Length: 195
Image 1 (cartoon, rainbow, N blue to C red):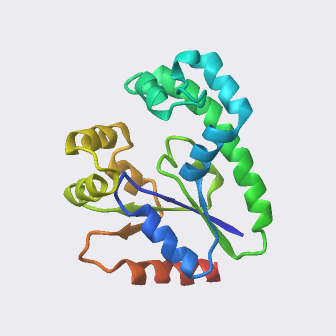
Image 2 (cartoon, rainbow, N blue to C red):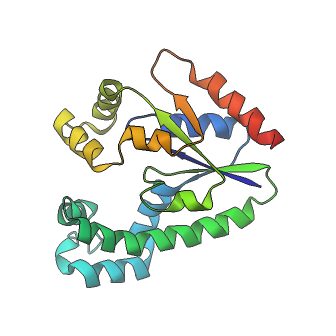
Image 3 (tube, helix red, strand yellow):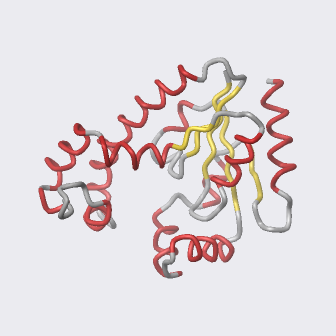
């Protein structure tokens, strides 16, 4: 079975591309969603995060506050690495179990915003980067997240540069509202079915 990774910067349209692959019958693993779910529900992760940051990262209901943790790690490379060393192994274990459940498919997709940064690309056979112009990405995220252009730009700056993602990927899907996305996905789908 081929393992295909899909990545791209914030607002590039990774999820849209993944939904098209799903419509074509391909299982898609959404690493970022799973990460959020495990973050909220896994007692081992909660315990490790509390050991790392202390009780100041809890909300009133005693759950982990993504916002408070984000404030702690934003701009602090060392703290972010420590947090990732808790989350990424848990997601990798979950992905391995998911993979077993989907072993009869010719290929699967794993979607992750930080595919290269997390090392997840090492498990993949091929990587697709979804790319879009910065102004379109900012407009999409402003609409989706109801946040400011400055905040989005800050998040973009914290991600791997677009050129680097493109250079390290085998395939590119352009989501620039000029080039149609569906034919690009169908072409890759057919290619993966025959590999």
